[in-house]
Image (cartoon, rainbow, N blue to C red; front, side, top):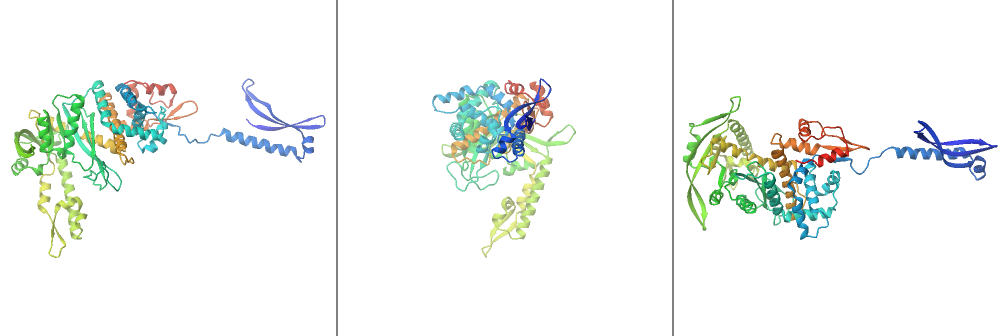
Length: 558
């Protein structure tokens, strides 16, 4: 309604008043009430107001403008968006009953904040919207459904504490996962990666080393161990200049001690971790191994067996297309290992599986020919040695009499790579394994690559803007735990029926916007959200969501 100036004539005088009109629910119509009495026109003229009606009309107009502006809602500096997609991760974390163990840290530390709240909220924030810790605190945490009470300085302090104790927290989570969901170490998958830091100088932790992304920046190495169902059960961080190969031994030894694992485990890793010392470690530890091995690095006798086009079997898809050809043998193979400071040769009985993938062969040959063409082009234009990069393996550099490097195409190296394109060799101590078991077990190693992809892409584990070693470790602990909860959700709750990308798309996109009375579900419809709504019997697809319905999501037990 509005204000208006009421003019009333009474006993030869004209009286003025400001009245307010409003809706009367009893009368079901408009009513008026006095807002301000202004006296008579005659009195106001005597008081120096030349035209009282025009004067007070301006006051009425001003009151109406204020009312109009008050009735128009302005945007707020507080986002109305609520992230809701992390509720399955919260349900899993609740089921793991981690809080009671994290609270024990309060007995020996003077925290002015709830450590479990800090840990859990950082996991949820990293899952729904990965970004820097500063943006996480100011832009993401306020939009989680549950409020968290700690300052930014306390966030950094807590992150540093988590990092300094990251191995304890991983041990705690692994023990709880084993107790609630079960951990199967009959086969364990292991691989390493590294994360680079855009800084100029190295420190004790961030050191220059062989980067997976061919960066020259200092890096930090990270080893990840999965159980046979691809659930993370261990992580080890190490300076970037250290070799990856001993990390496998360190992580597996530590995990066995921490979790009282006494049974035999099969260590599965790619060719980067296949070395005689790791193989010897597996054997002396009472374990087994399944590694890939470079075909090009085999002895000449073994290469003859590789290229001998006989004894191959074929595995086809349902349409009859050949997926891969394979043949295997069991024999004793020599390895040189270090024993008491000396190199000794031991003969180990292994099963070796050779596979040939036609699709992979085509792809590899295409990549080789592209590099060869690039090498020829660089040679033609007399490029410098360091311009060749990876293509340098297809040329020979020799110094001429004039001191300038002469470049010649290395046809032997090209022919060798083309000859072995598409071949892969798997070696295992488990001679009773079938060819298909070996192939399937090794190819499940891609789950680790996917876990690294989740860290690097889905969870934006880098770039890392933190500087202190403990804070960096705390950051990667948060990433690891986010991967762990997602993997449990994917494999233990959803029975691996949905891909990682579908799951993270839901976690990121399931949001609501708060209106005056209810919440509006702004999520895009998908088959996944339909299925999840049915599975959990929750109103995930409703356009309007009440406070009670949202509470039911976060109280849902898995």
